[in-house]
Amino acid sequence: MRFIQPKPANAEPNSHTAAGMGTEFMVPPATGTAELTTNVKKMGTVTRLDLATLTMHCLANEQCMNETFHAVDDSWKDDPSY
Image 1 (cartoon, rainbow, N blue to C red):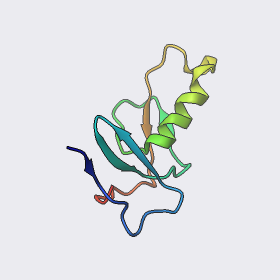
Image 2 (cartoon, rainbow, N blue to C red):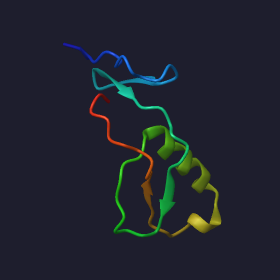
Image 3 (spheres, helix red, strand yellow):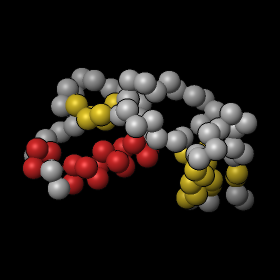
């Protein structure tokens, strides 16, 4: 059986649908305001697309080596439709 969650009516036109493990689900669009912090007590929500962008910027960056980061986006408001 394959569960497909329809795109919410208020979804951005450029939002993506991701598929995996026999399910399809909405991927919220990137906000572009996510950031990495070394403050391990700070937690929050970040979109997958923003996390991917932050990860790619850190791959070859010497300042990211041997560090522990949390990705947070203070502009993100949890939306249960995603």
